[in-house]
Length: 285
Image (cartoon, rainbow, N blue to C red):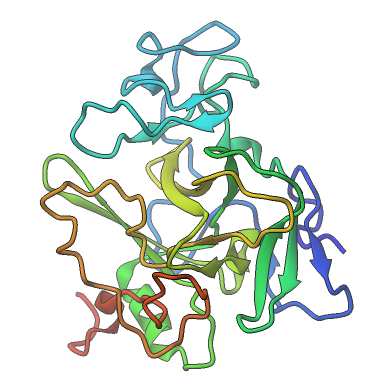
């Protein structure tokens, strides 16, 4: 059985095969949900004018902040910006070749993955082959919601429901914040099966390709062995490159009524959650 139903470059297997997966519509890309604007499928970037097979910085407009990848791996070192470097991949309007080195996330799955039944955490996701540090693993795709719809769905969840809705807040250098809410409960991809860990082997990076709606791309934080479960930090803080003065002061999302079963040395005991989605004063106008 292929979980992706042929929509990914590689099939995603299931173990054990006789177990029934949760019902959902598979989509490798974001789709617009209630209140979700702009439309994630809309192409709004003009693209670069590079005529070469592969783009290079700083001549490429998509690479104005420097190279995004090196040898297919994400570049996270050497930034002098003082904040997390925005990542823009070359897009459908660019003049470069399809094998441009700045086209990684858009190529989809590059490693054999398997959805499997864990002993304590329900379904999980593991790799069937070795993944080198820095390589792209998968996206976290789903419906793009506004904050009102995200709050509504979150507050309707029971203690037995899975934690699917993720809130990504990008803190820009000018002090503004971009919020993105993604829910793969009903429409999503293989990323919906990733479990939380207080010591994850993946980290999430917003990557923009065709529009300002970011792809929530997950990269390997270290070498990952074949057969190892894949995980990320649900709180969104792990390797999020917050300014030094803000690190340590971000306590939001460290308490939850749901126990954490990651079994790592630094486990805090409960799954993190975003308290802004549980406000009691009604929906934002």
